[in-house]
Length: 183
Ligand SMILES: [Zn+2]
Image (cartoon, protein in one colour):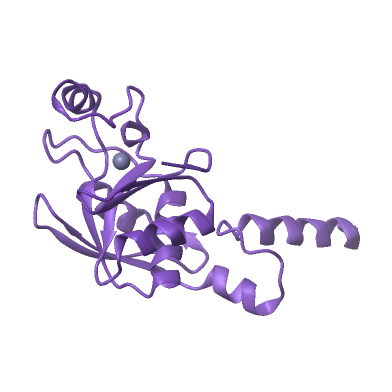
């Protein structure tokens, strides 16, 4: 079967776009190389003490084994329930790590089960949404080791990929993959 060269080119272009989830434009070879480069994240969890270094993207694809490790780490630590984590959230963390020159994220909260979210709404001091993106694996509360939390917030707002909440008293930033907004 022969393929019309224009159609083949268009397919290649579309494939290139699909492989660039970081919002990197078609800015030439270096941008393409950056989009294809392995992506890794280092974490420590403030509640469980667990640590993880995960190469979650390599050879042009997200790695299921690494994503499973991340999912386990980001489980609801109160109940043990786990949920798939939005890879766009991991890409946001990866971009922020690069932008701020940090090395590892401290996790305050990842996935929250509906029961935990309801409990936090009852007992917490506010700021917990009824339909929190934490319940969809699309939100995380973090700080970046060695980087001022206000700087992390500023970098996240510049990145503009989702929600950014700044909690100065508790010294963490909420990041999610919902529509860009900040508080
Ligand atoms: Zn949050």
